[in-house]
Length: 211
Image (cartoon, rainbow, N blue to C red):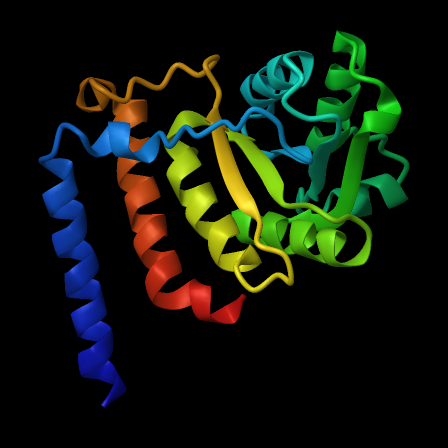
């Protein structure tokens, strides 16, 4: 009984991706942007951190939030290298150092533990932090443009059952080279769009139930 259901899901994904691939608006839909006047904190998601840090800094400077959250990014077996005397600065540490150098006070930046391997892990870490240490009703996610829609979907699903309703804002980085209106003209943009839609479908069909 499980095999026909799995085949149906695979066919659904294939159909979804093929349909999206022929849609010129597919790239623009991924770039969700909703920035409230002020939020309790910015959440800079890891990944292409230079463009995301720059966007986060701009928002902080504009007064969109007084605090910045970053979840520690997992980097595979790097701790084994550290145990052997290799000094490694993680992407999360580099992001924090960059923000501090740009002028964000260090006590305004909060690093959350997690060794996150993806956006779901980051959302869960933020949820734990809010439940244990911070009352919040508004967050602004900062990420790469193509990643913004999926990040918003994941955070909304992860934080939907909080005691206090939380508004999830989104601010895609303007420092990215992604072209949402002409994404089919560049190989890297095509890969980003197809990958994001596949991951959105995967989250809705498989991963959402586990958060």
